[in-house]
Length: 142
Image (tube, rainbow, N blue to C red; front, side):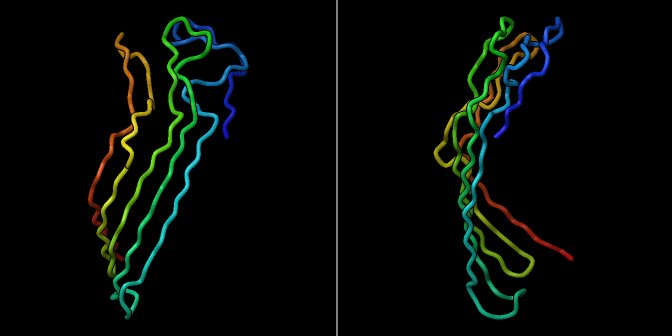
C-alpha cells in the first residue's frame, strides 16, 4: 500500500499539471501486489550437478488504479491507469549449470493502461505488453 500525496501546492508554469496539497501523486497506485507459486521436481537420481530437474511457476501481478494527472488539472487529460492484474507462467528443465525454459507473459492478453502523457505536443498512451511467449537459456559458470 502506498499513500503518496503532495505536501504543498504545486503551481508552476513549467509543471505539466498543477496539484494541490493532499492530492494523490499521479502514476502512483495506492495498491500493488505480486504473488508467485513455484514447484520444483527432481527427475533423475545422481549427483546434484548430474541430475535432471524441472520447475514451473505461475505469477500474478496487480497494479491498482492510478491517474495520469492531478484532479484539478486543466492542462492535460486525467486518464485512469492500472486497475488490472497480469498472469504469467514459466516451465524449465535443468541439468548441471544449464537451464532451458519456456515462458508466457500476460496470458490473458490484457490491455491495461500503464502510462499516459504528452510528449512534444502529442498525446500518448502506453498499454501493458501484449501476450508474449519466449524461450530462455541460462548457464552458470563458476
